[in-house]
Image 1 (cartoon, rainbow, N blue to C red):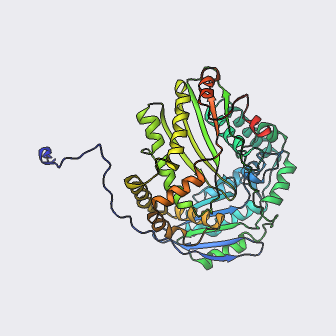
Image 2: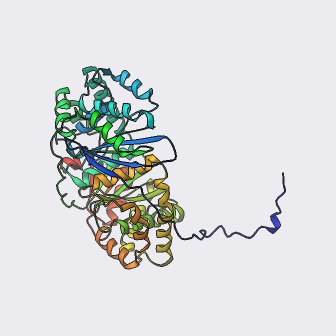
Amino acid sequence: MARVDRAHRPAVDRTRLPQVGTPADVSFPSFSRHQLDGGLTVRTARVGGLPLASVLLIVPAGTSRDPGDRLGLTSLTAGLMDEGAGDYDAIGLSEAFARLGTHVETDVGADATTFGVTLVERHLETALSLLGLMMAAPRFADADFIRERDLRLSRLLQMREMPPAIADRAMLASAYGRHPYGHGALGRESTVSAITRDEIVAHHASALGSAGATLIVCGDVDAARVEQAAASAFAGWHEGETPIEPPPAATPEPGLWVIDRPGAAQTELRVARLSTTRLTPDYHALVVLNLALGGQFVSRINTRLREEKGYTYGARTGFDLRRGDGLFICQTAVARDATADALHDIFGELQGIATDRPLEGEELERAKTSLARGYARGVETVDQVARQAAQIALYGLADDHVDRFVPQVRALTADDLREAAARWIWPAPYVAVAVGDADRIEAGLRALDLAPVRRVADPWELRDR
């Protein structure tokens, strides 16, 4: 082995971030579009290199389609759709996908439910046929329904003892109240336990139809082949009801909600405010602001709470942008006795970036360059390309959205960031949730005088108030 002459190595200052160069442009493939009878739109792009195909079926029905007294209905319905369809029982359907070298991934978000498979392209027709059968003729067998419902009830019971889950549930409930966005996918115990199989069947018929749905296929395939296979595979899928847009969310009442966990050594903290939709003209500015504020390890809030103060292992922020009004969120877990100080520092950073400490100069250039140089990593595989295309379809983004991302980020000015921060970060009515030992943290939180402090026993009280 050759020896390294360490004496002649150039000196490296490891206290400074390395210099970065000019980011490369990103070129996104062109997708063809074809609409089938029944309202299903097929979008196809050829992405060569490997004999693979990535398939995503986006149905515009998410948790926001749950009836108010049946929270969790959409997720339970979607979760049962691969538990047998047509002549296949649950095991038979799973084995049919396994023989193709794949399995179905189901994701239920606020605005849509997505079913996805990635497989060798020669099996595409068979995979689409199985997906079409799932959508058109799920069995919803009694035994499968009872088992899946009971599993979800058990999971909800477990979440009662998980501070992060409690805090997330309380955050949604305090920010949205009874709005359709005010709950997570699993729902709540009282509503899930009340769901019947007949309600599953009816919800599938109304909410999970082909109207407004989009099939994304990308890989080593051509559009004509995909369109022919999709037309055959989804011919029996019912249209269902026309998708509905979520209503505007009401501005929440400012408040600091304390959920007691006696003896807890840590406090789970959430700070949130209503923000805007995914179609906001400020999107690129918000992505840059978030990266600098709490979206990376060297961000302001993480540096303040972790590196300078030692309150936490990590803190982060994010814009959860949706078809309707989304949220801006800060989340962390801090040492119990640092709860009030951490919350004070979080609010100080939120105010600072919109007022006396705007994002500008070297810090702004570093954030823009970090985003621009890293963006290409998100479109390297057929799966990633398909998921970007799914975002474009779901939110009605421009076809060249991906191609324009880097130039639009690079073009942002300090004034753009300052104006966006004033609109979507500060000032605003914020809600905050602290899950911890109330007897040890409540007095300090009241002394901050940030918002009225109220103790609640259960996060669902915030939705029901």
